[in-house]
Length: 415
Image (cartoon, rainbow, N blue to C red; front, side):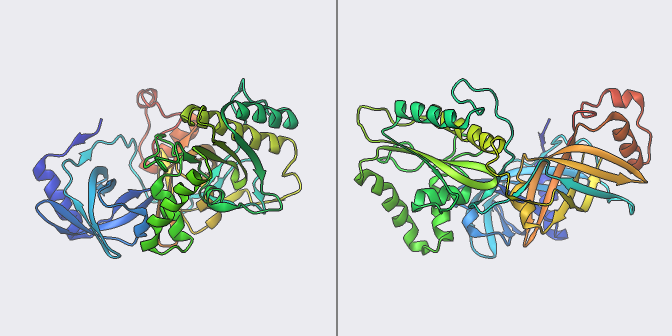
């Protein structure tokens, strides 16, 4: 269990991180970014950084991680000021240790090599490419939508949508591009544009832990990426929200149809009639399930059959590894879109002439200029392979008693 450091210990470690130039990792949005402590005040820390300011919001609390003496420490701090070179954050109340990392990291042996596979067929498609990746797995059985018959699935969508919406449109992007700000934002981010009420505007926060919704801040960031001047962005967001009120739309949903890193279409629903309730999260979840079923059905019905395949296996530049996982670096833009936190992979490891195959899950992602670093935890590692890896890395025997108490063997461990 994570436990807080004593005050004197906290002050000592933060001071040592400053004096020794140790990187801290700042978690912002879906990425992780290295920063360094430059100054320590009575109630704040001054940090040097190189991350885009658009990822940060004044007053928001961010998580930081720090490796100290083979131990990972963590704390949360609120952003007080920011500029292109420095950040000022409030002094953290607590710094926590004992975060649950199970195995120490080691530099990879000279003969170690690892190849990563994203699994299944990957495609080079002429559809808009989102910032996020969806593995397009077979959906859970649904009483609402059946992927077996594509025409019947579209019919089911139209019937269900007519029960809750006044307008419904299913748009595919083969041969055409997204139109209007809503579709363009959805296609770029791969997330749902949810306007619960055009009178209240876009939601300020995403209620889902796995991040599904375009928040007001994210929409503003997208406008800046599109070239809108910083001082005009707030007015553009207001104009976007008010535009729906002027056309009589009271509530709106625009859901991406995600296939791998591509948005191949979208489903749009709108409420105009005042007698209808606004869309709530249950409606959002129903039609997000539809988009997942539709993506799977398109694949099963050969919609992408004639498209070019991408490479399946990627060599990795391993920074370090443990018995629980690996940390590797890459400049591959393709992997940067596919390997998001939580993504599953397949790994082929070679050590001392032995081939080890394991599944893995991306636990951490952070960027340093053009290089991405990925921490991948092993899953479904065979017990005999785990024992070999453990004993080779740490130079000591894994006893049967130790192995019996490890929940990770055959199921997975922490990187």
